[in-house]
Image 1: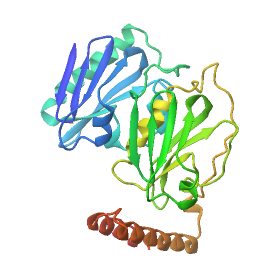
Image 2 (image 1 turned 45 degrees about the vertical axis):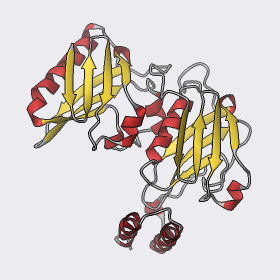
Image 3 (image 1 turned 90 degrees about the vertical axis):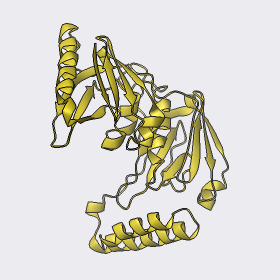
Length: 294
């Protein structure tokens, strides 16, 4: 058995599976603490590595493509602090980390685990029931239905539609995007026979996200739903036309459009601050970030 215990978390490998437990240190992200302990069967792994640094190193696990609904739902958009398959290692434990990697690699070789993609999920996804409040709404999933409820910050036209209850059997796709630059993020559900090109701000099947602390938790809802949808590489998957709107790339926008977008963002931040959504500190930091781009 190989084990490494750090402030960032504890990883244990018994030859058949890895148990990843997030640490209780204040620097461990809310996302990882909420996700909780993960158990990875050896067959879900494609590899392991360790990178040394001057003050700390990093253990990394690489999963086989298609093995984890969380990785599929987030599409590589989780930031490093929220990645459950990375572990920060203190410099005095570099030897332990290297031994841990060697043990995992040897087990993969002995069991002849292939590194190619899989056509079924090998992890169950986040446990349910699950409820997350962020951005302009609350998403709740009990394993069978997704319920979307709106708050006082929701756009009037969207809130007028009222709360939504979506059977998971009616969902053909789910996606989560974090806020990036001037673009807000979202959690969006694609409902069978109900395509829409409305932006998340107005889409009654989407929760709009503004880039705050709880936004990543919406990825847990996305992953829990994804785990119950047909695997994209499996026989039960169907080709569904993508009804999502194509958002313009910031890099492709003209300088004039970019300037207008920055001004709009400043007005939005001012309104969020005025209504109490943003604290003074959050407003100041967000405003400075926008002003630096003008």
